[in-house]
Length: 304
Image (cartoon, rainbow, N blue to C red; front, side, top):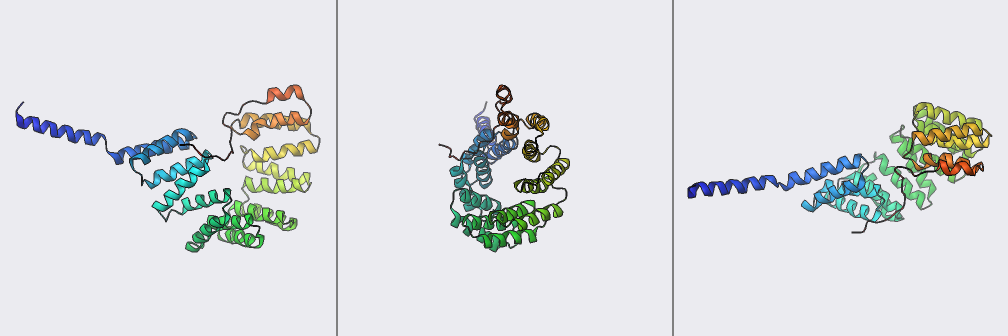
């Protein structure tokens, strides 16, 4: 091989090696893999992929944000807070990240900081329903119920079909022992969202707290009809059966829950709790088992 050919060959080898390791392509690959793991519920694997992406680009905003979401799923609040702060510092217009940052602040009882952040978001967009709800939640945490009521009412005015706003507003009335007002809000939630299983179930739970069993059962059954796979209305229906002495119905419902929602600890253990409440000790052990994907709520931080 001539000297000139050798030089060309070496140059081509350098170019090809550079193409095989394109940092931008590599980091996007890590991001895409992480998002796939996240959607599949494999949060530990997603964390590794997002961290790999960030290692290639410390200012990769999207990877920081996805890593923050992953830490929230894993209940690593300190790490989620750090990643959300980084995300916002890289892109101050990422209101979604700011909302989640506010949620972390609320869970960490940093109410004033959460309030300041919510006020900033509301000032930037008066129609931001989620920011209104976050601001209302900070007022609830600081026991300023009149201001909390005002924010949730504004949220409903902006979006009359958002069920969560109604339920939060009703919960404030309940905490203030304004039960007639609370019932009215629950009913408005159903009227505004006639196809919402969540709204029906919430009204049913309210009726149960008032001892109105017939009304409770009617609303919970309506919720189940709207969403045949919904777990909450079925869980709420079990104490109704127990309170009205319908043990066979309660046992049947417990078996259905265990089969239909094995990934939900509450649903999976409902039958065992039924046996405990009815003193059937021999049957309670066999009914309890390990849930395939327990929902851990422990608040913790990931150690580096």
